Image 1 (cartoon, one colour):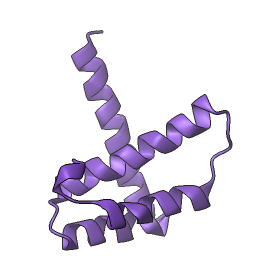
Image 2 (cartoon, rainbow, N blue to C red):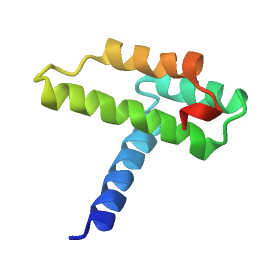
Image 3 (cartoon, rainbow, N blue to C red):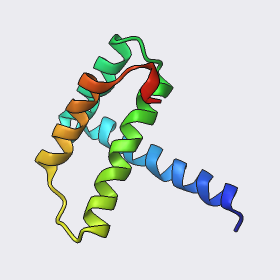
Image 4 (cartoon, rainbow, N blue to C red):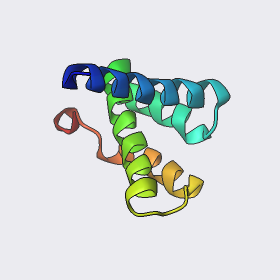
Length: 90
């Protein structure tokens, strides 16, 4: 499998996580963060890219550091996006 195919599959997996969490409204911070980022002027796609970064950070935290998934930490990271997002963050 080529790198471009691996990248595309990874992006699809991240998008699937976002979609599942939005559909389930779990965590509720996911939907709130998406709405707030869009209200700040980001497009839906731009907001999802930023949210995807948080998803990846959390997965890496769990896998690389051997830490358990922490829903509160994840929710805080999502909320923090609203405070730090801007055109230069993409």
